[in-house]
Length: 189
Image (cartoon, rainbow, N blue to C red; front, side):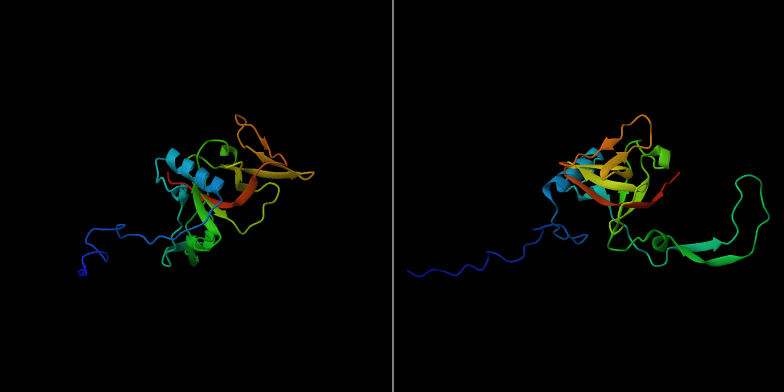
């Protein structure tokens, strides 16, 4: 008996597969960090992939504006000056586009004393080492937090900047990682 060769199996089919759109990339994350990102995304009503908890910083080379060299008084008006510096590129100012920089949306009110309010976008640099007094994004036992980093006598304390929230002493046995240092923020009024 002779078998016929079927040519209808395999190959591309109209409408099959993942819809085209933004390119994707497989990324390996520790399970606890991936789970924490999923929870953060779900809490925001975002993608269940979890990576949506972190915002992508898009670099636009033409995103600049003139920078006036004179400061603007917030009290009494001052005469306008005609002197301008070179255009200020906000991507350059915040380091957006560098491989070590990511953006994250602020949730909660524990950092309002440092000017970070719910809905603000924080610029975070993974390449910067935490120093006492800087604001960090950290993962503590699988949960992300943004707090002021304090190191006293070899012990790490994550300080809330709102008296309604407690500080967190990081136990030596804790699964603790500083993901990056907050270098700036943005708020839309």
